[in-house]
Amino acid sequence: MTLNSLPYAAFLVIAAALHSRLRPWRRNGFLLAVSWLFYVLCAPRFLPLLLASTVLCYGLGLAMEARPGWRKGLLAAGLVLGFGVLFAYKYLGFFGRLASSLLGRLGLAPLALPVLVAPVGLSFYTFTLAGYLVDVCRGKRPAERNFCDFALFASFFPAVLSGPIERADHLLPQLKEHRRANAGPTAGDVKAGVTRFLLGLAKKMILADQLAIAVNTAFANPAQFTGVQLLLAAMAYSLQIYCDFSAYSDMAIGSGRLLGITLLENFNAPYLCRSIQDFWRRWHISLSSWFRDYLYIPLGGSRRGTVRKYGNVLIVFAVSGLWHGAAVTFLVWGLLNGLYQVAGALLAPARRRVREALRLREDGTPLRLVQAAVCFLLLTVAWVFFRAESLGKAGEILGRIATMAGGVFPLGVTALGLSRARLLAVCLAAAALFVLEVLGQKRPLTDRLCATVWPRYAVWVGLVLAIAVFGAYGAGYDAQEFVYFQF
Image (cartoon, rainbow, N blue to C red; front, side):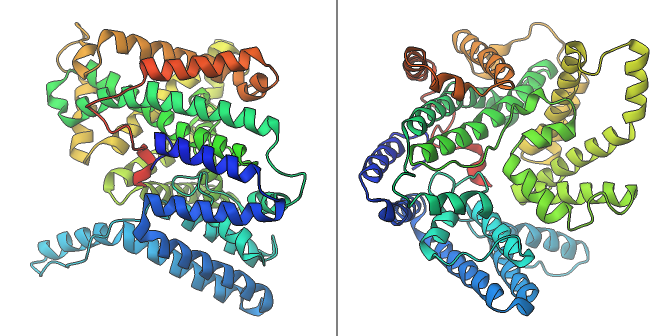
């Protein structure tokens, strides 16, 4: 059961309706039971692992507070156990294959390691719980004593599958406030929740799932397509993965608002960025900030010289790449994003001289558009590695794009699997999304709509109709899955 399915819509409506009728002191217990039920419906055999992780981290937090002198040792034990489980499920097979390849070249017997199926949401709730343990160890917050609140923090159902990766100092105070008589979901929460959920569903069904058809067609056999077609497919993937993942975040945040809980924002119009560093302040914000606070800064951040700073950046992005999946392609994607940032910092003086020579204003629209376009192309190159099945496939795609294999005209866009009518719908939806994100930089669209009555209802009806008419249904993709479910 995923957030874009009819069963989830029914599940959410029933949960919200029952939740609104409960006495305040029963709300969190009800939400915890609902969250565990949701996880059972998604991945029943992995619920014991979620429960064990929750109990372990709850106990370690209390132990750190009771034994301050043991804090670092208890933290180390918690991180080793938590990330050890994550490693076993996600990376044991990958490193086993690498070791077997090395042993084979040395003429030794291959290493037989099992390949395990990773539990749904494992990466997300592991990072959530690890962040909590580090905060308690640092004395940033006291250990949580209410097990129900803590367990709900670890497994709140809108976010447990694919985030946002919550922070204890953001979510736990809300859960405590949630038990107060006047702290339930308000009319404003319901308006914002419905609006956000429908916007996310529209992004998923109208843009992401439609673009997936073209992307899957091109990446499956790049030799059949021209360089221009592959370039369009690569750019389509840049848009697809954004619409897909931000749609999940929108729907998760909307679901939380319907229950009176505000989850962390995860995206802020990332393709309006002016640099790759700016992009990573806007993209998957909960993960980027997690790596900044719990990896980059502990490594020394920018405090130990320029060379060390750049090395830390590359380490963080290499880890970020591997977090997304156990494959060399993800590692290359991460390192490439890190190299972009290092190169951007080294070339900053040269770029400034060019701007001054061309008399371009730093805050001018022409410069902003050029910077956004350059960033989008650089990111598209990196996304090719992220999407491709292997380095060889990625190299083939980029090679055909660079040489414009097959010529430029005719474009033959419909060969990618989308009819002219659906292609037009995608282009119009993408243009509408761009306009909304530009306007949303001044004031979020949700806030504007919630301040109205008839315009809000018109938008709701319009989104439902657009999803019904232009949404992707049928063969060529799996409408029940989000891209980030595999991570």
